[in-house]
Length: 215
View: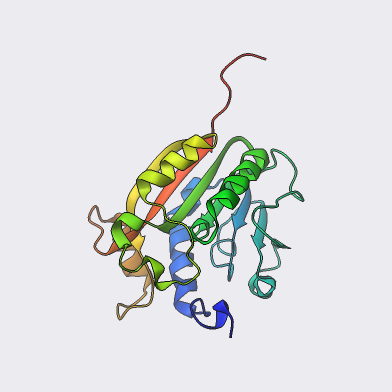
């Protein structure tokens, strides 16, 4: 059995979560005319629900294409290779629970590609486990190979040519696999609350650090 049959099996609650997150949080960061790229799209729960003019989803799992809606352009392959995407053509890059699965060298290569495809004003948006808050559970997922906290992730981004715009150390709970109901009303209340109980995932936004020197 594969990872998508065991640790990351399809779960309808995940779609409820992402539909609500897109509508009540992420959509404010995406303009109607934007081109959006999702790295490691999985079941497509983010890219299917975000509203924009162009959608591209990348995942090395061939099964991802079966879950993407008709308005999403699927690219099956590694997030390290974005060569099919033109320079400066993307406004918003999103990656949820991706970079902890990559060796650090591949993450660095991916950031190089992200810098290339982002246009002026474009942003990289990362949601992933914060090791500082979930060290006891981090390796319950056997495919995690790299460790990042809110502090080390921001430093890594800066070291690879990105400027951190926002860092929320506590953004969402680690998983939907709990006895708590996954309901739009509860998710909206959680997003609006200044207190984030059980929050162990961080959210970081960054932009390309442009060279300030004149041409």
